[in-house]
Amino acid sequence: MTTVLAIEDDPAILRGLADNLRFEGYDVITATDGETGYRLQQERKPDLILLDLMLPRMSGFEFCRKLRGEGIQTPVLMLTARSEEPDRVLGLDLGADDYVTKPFSVRELMARVRALLRRSQPGADGNPVLPDDLRFGSTEIDFRSYEARRSGEPVDMTRKEFAILRFLASRAGEVVTRDDLLNEVWGYESYPSSRTVDNHVAGLRAKLERDASQPEHIKTVHGVGYKFVP
Image (tube, rainbow, N blue to C red; front, side, top):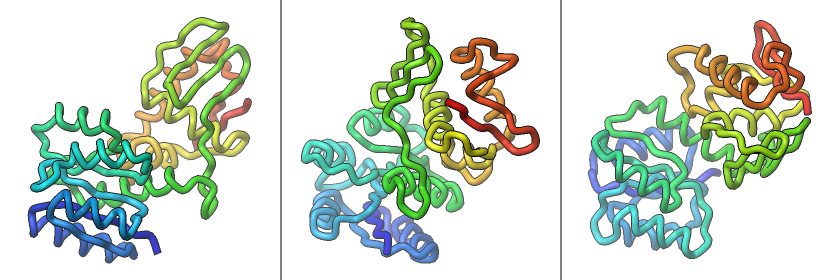
């Protein structure tokens, strides 16, 4: 069973997190301070950590710094207040993988939990293995350093564009639906419009295809989604 460690000092929020995670079938461990949470992750080795940033005895920032400093790569989903944008950036820089802002919907939270678990367990249960690099045509991509080159020249790409291309490449030759991309890249089960995906794909084609109007590599499968052809 997949184990989730939830660390949150607000008892009501922590109880709600635990109840909803258990309802989804996860084994849940809880802690109300950073030191106890860190001890539990060492003892129980959870598959995912939900981490509030403002914790007693060890902040979420220190928790992330210590975790990554010891080489532990367990996915971390931060829980932050809507007004704490600088804190979210710092948390991500220290090694957190994603965040949700309070108050959050249970649906969004569970979607992000599932997305992080998929990414952390490549190849399991049919999950695609995400490539670290990619070469096609005159294009070279390094997904680890977020660097792209075409004919030797740097290409300025957004993180969303890197994520879309990486997911398409992980399923090269297969049709990927817009919903698949929304779930994987945006982490939501629903999003305002699938047109969002189309706009990002159009941007990718403009940057990487020889002729964006007649793409050779990022192809549209009408009425379904997209297919990457190396």
